[in-house]
Length: 219
Image (tube, rainbow, N blue to C red; front, side, top):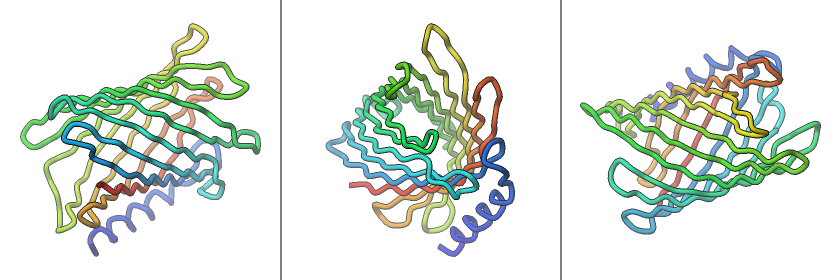
């Protein structure tokens, strides 16, 4: 546990030092809490809630609820779908987005390394805006190494976002993350990560530095 706390402290201090103004280079904190319910060997139900703070982590600007079900066809292929209920701060008010989605994931293993590709298609309904679609692909690489009794395991991930709407297609976001997972208790798993999110707005790309914390309880 001491090693995990030390690693977390170093990561926080290092990336907090890169914080800038609220626009390009902003520092944000994201907190995700979830629960997995294993229905049987193939079917799983997942509940999730996430909170985000921007403006150097001083402004609460995002909140979502998520419910999803996934079906494992075999050890490497999973299909699923769900619904995300999103509140996003816009001009001082929280705007609601309804977002049903489908997911297909494929994973490969070689010499203990695991490479996972998650494909996600979202339908985005936002009040007072045109409906749109968005495709996301997240690649995650996990090495076979696990350290200490709490199984600290590093990972790298990269996710691209492609928006569809009004007969147009646009690559408008990329998220690169580096972090580690650890097991706090038998059924409680945690993650700590740094993410560089590059977001295209009105033709310009802005970077966001994110310190993320995840907690997941499995039943």
